[in-house]
Image (cartoon, rainbow, N blue to C red; front, side):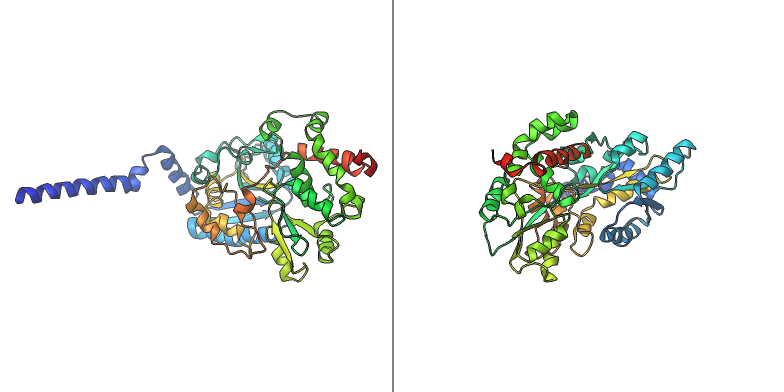
Length: 419
């Protein structure tokens, strides 16, 4: 009996030791990457990090100053200092630092809401590579996602990290039709059916108009090749010629026969409210809900996502070359990628920026926080939009496409388009 009890006790101790070795954080800390990150985090805690932001978006600025800053203070005892100034001013100061060989600069981080990365890389303003040292980059970002690998047509090369996206969604009046189109071909059929009831904003003046035109023209292109080779205007024209011809062909079916393209979504929303149009669109996934609440949309307004995809800008964060607190800056970017902060800035009452997570890639537990965000039925969920995303093109290609649209669609006569 004693032998049996001793044997059972030994087996129990072996199982306990095995379990502890599997669950102990000490065992995990033997990984050099984990050890390195712990050192970075320890170095960055209880410090001040300065972030340069160039944005007119009050919701974005408020979220950064309040929600995000509070999270950093509570979690890492980091003070986040926001510097609101133009990108040109930030670059001007960095250029001066380079010239005067100032190794400990006044800024740590920069937020690129649209463009600026390529210019900063070319000028040597950024620190890196660093992105793969961040645990949340490895956990939550799809390494094969072209928007994680490229920005403005060049490889990111771990010198910046994407933190969120915006994307075009469509708004329609259910009194006219209920079954929404899944493809652009289906959308154009509806435009022909309800002649004069659809228009998109001028892509030269409106972010939504640019997203609509560029998204449609680029939807079938090979983005890898576009980033690897700089196509000329003539070469790009040959690639998108059929799509340009389609946009020209539907002009007679547009509002006022496509002779006038509204300058902004505000103009289109007014036409939509008056039922002169039965379509609108927005880069804000909660825009229709707001407009319904304010009684500035028809009561039957609803939203839909195109399965063939839409596009929109990506926001990034980067560390500046002479940051005096690179460890703190890395902790801040890593925190921005956490499920808590991705869900917080997605919240309808806050920034309303779509998460950077790829819904088909990120672990389900990371999406749990995001799914807690409560939406009205007149708003699309993040996975309903991001699952059908067309990657953002570089400014070079976007500008070329708008130029080609101007030549072959805007200035095309109805008679020529019909031939």
